Image (cartoon, rainbow, N blue to C red; front, side, top):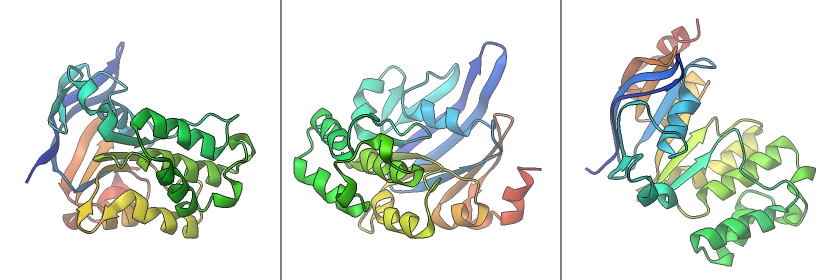
Length: 228
C-alpha cells in the first residue's frame, strides 16, 4: 500500500517556544488520521506543516512521495486545506471565489456549480461572503478545499459552526467515495466522533505525541485524558 505521509521526529519551534516535537508516524493512502489535543497542543501547526505553509525546524516529512519543504512545489496542488481561515475573499461571492480557485487549478466551471449545490449554497451563490453566517462560510470553504479533488485533505475541525444536517451533507465530499477514499488528516475535539471516522489516532499535548494507535484500539476515555 502506498504511503501518503511519513513523519520522523517532526517538530516546529518559534524561537524558544516549541509548538511541535517528536512526531513520528506513517499513514497509508486512503486512510484517515484524527489528531486530538487541547488548544495549543500543536494540531494546527502539524496541519500547516503538511500543507507546506510552515517549515519544520526538526525531523523530516514526506507527503505524497515528496520531501518537505524541499519538494513542496510538487505537492501543493495535490493538497486541500480546510482551516480556521476559510481562505475566501469576503467581498466576492461564493461563486466568484470558487471560479477563481478553479482557474488556478484548471478545474472546469461545471465543477463549481456542482459543489455550490452540494453544499447547499446554490440560492446564495452570488451573495458576498461577508453576508454569510459562519456555517455558510464553513460550507463555502469546504467546497473550495475539495474543488480540485485533492489526494490529501487536511481538515482543522471541519464541523465547526455546522449544524448536524450541514455536517452530514458535507461528509461525502470530505470522505471521498468507497472505491477512492480520500487520505485525510482531521483535527477534532470530539472523541467519539473522531475515533469513529478515523483509521489512526494521534494525541498531542504540549506539542508532543502522547498517544498514537489504531483508532479502533483507542477509547474515548484515553482521548478525554488528553484534556485534563
